Each structure stands twice: as C-alpha cells, then as structure tokens.
Length: 344
Image (tube, rainbow, N blue to C red; front, side, top):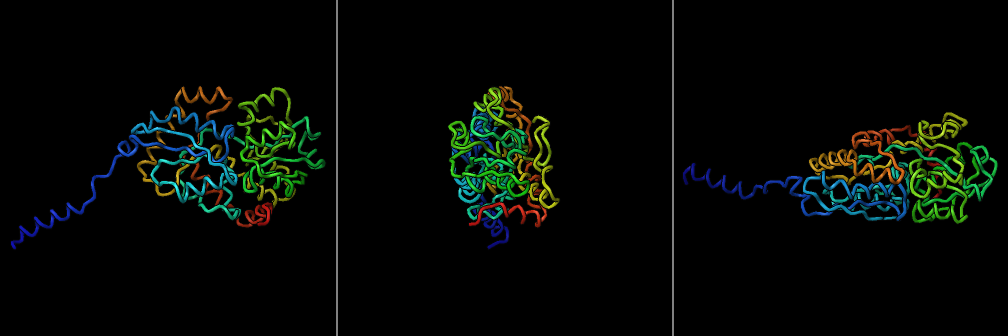
C-alpha cells in the first residue's frame, strides 16, 4: 500500500475514534432541570427563601434557560444533603446545595456521618452576609442577657448535634460558662421556631440575624417577644445592636477564644450555595456569572426584601477562600473545638 493511502486510512480511523464536539453550556442546559436542594425541612426561613427567589429569577441568566426547582432534603442538620451532593448527585451542574453553614465544620469536627470534603465543592456564592445570634423567649424564661444565661439554666432547641443550633450553645457552655440545655431532633430550624412559640423550648442559639429579621420572626422583634443574647461570628456585625456582645470577647482564655473562632468561622459564608466536585469548569463559570446577574435583578431584590431579607453577596471565589481558611485553622484550636461535640 502506498504511503499516501496508508496516511489517508490513518486519518479516517483517527476521525472515527475522535469524540463528538463537546456540548456548549447552552446546549447542555437547554431542556434540563436544575434542582436546588435545601438541606433542611420546609419553613426554614432565609436559608430556603433565597433559593426559592433564585428559582424564579435566575433561569433567564443561565444559558439554555433550564427549569429550576427547589427540593427539601432534611437530615442530620444538612449533612445528609451535603453527602448526597458530594457523592451521589450528578456532577454536571444540575444539582446545587443550599445548607445552613454549620455543616461546613462537620468533617473537621469528625462527625461520623459527614462523608464529604467542603474544599472539593464548587462554590457558587452567598446571597447575603450575616451573623448568628442567640435568643431567649421572654414568656418562658427570665433570661434577658448572656450573663443571665451563665446563671440560669435554659432549654435550647436544635436540629442535630452536628449543626450550629447545637454546636453553638454547647460551645458557649464550655468556653464562656452558660447553662444551656440543648434538645436536638427537630426536623428543621423552622420546627425549632414553632417549638419556641409553643413553649417546648425557651430559645435558640444559632439563629441568623437575617432570619430573625424576616418572616414571622420579624414580628417577634416588633412585639418584643425575644431577648437577643449574643452574637456568634468572628467580628461584631454592624446591623446588630451594639449592646449585644460577641461570644469571642467573652472567652476567658486565648485558647478558648481560638476554639470559639473555629466554631464561629463559617458565619462568614452567610447563606452558601455550592455544587459537588467534578462539575465542568465552563458550567461553573456560567453558573457563577448567572448567579451574580440574578442577585442584581430588581425582581430578585424585590422578592427577598418583601420578606425582610438583605442582598449583600459573597462571590463564589471568596467563599472558596473562606472555606480553605477554615480548614487551615490551627490543629490545637480544632481539637479543643471538637470537645464540645457529643461522644459517638
């Protein structure tokens, strides 16, 4: 066979083996459905309100205009949803997670169910920055300040041992001397709120300031139903009354303060949204861009502000940096923080 003929045959064979032209982002998303998974039960306040608003607005900025739906996946304070997104859900950009930020600490604190690596997620962004607070229901407890909570026992409602509604009060018990009794097992943070109103529990620690200022909880403040006891972040928030102390400032030793910083660090992520590992970069980039445009859309802003919520975005790249910083905190501080977790 002549060399030219052999070359022609080789080229044809190579073309036959070559993959078809890769789909564009628009081609991939056209006609598909994106599922926004909220890692808690219904009536979850701000953590559910933001994705529901995005589902109404964001599709017009995504190439291919896919359908967007919201699905609740409660379980283990968000750990069930995080495990699903990390290991089971398609790694193609069609499944996103919206989980209260306390889940970020679960692998670091060695919660047994936490089989995911937050540093491997593709972070989309956060709709707003916020800080967590602790509250007391005035009708069911005489506690009016964090100093009162150091003297008077108080029953606190929580979702699971690995979520911030349990981790925060247990940490405050250990590192500043409060007397919170934590009751876990509620299906969602919304269910904890109902339990507070019914008198089953006397308060909640790990309530975002944004959530407290939205929905029916806003009426709690207007009707003077609650006392705001403490802020749980790495620095005081400018929109929280200055009289509400920062937990870090109440720690009695440098080691205790650093351990509290480990536990409070995820507050900087606000209301984080993410996809699992392995999503193609062009889709990640397109989703982040659409996210940015949606959060600037007047329709989105109107929807969330009618619910008493703010829009103060944290970009995906910044979220990823925050997560890397959390997992780079000193091992000694992490080990001390782990002591607040229940024995398994």
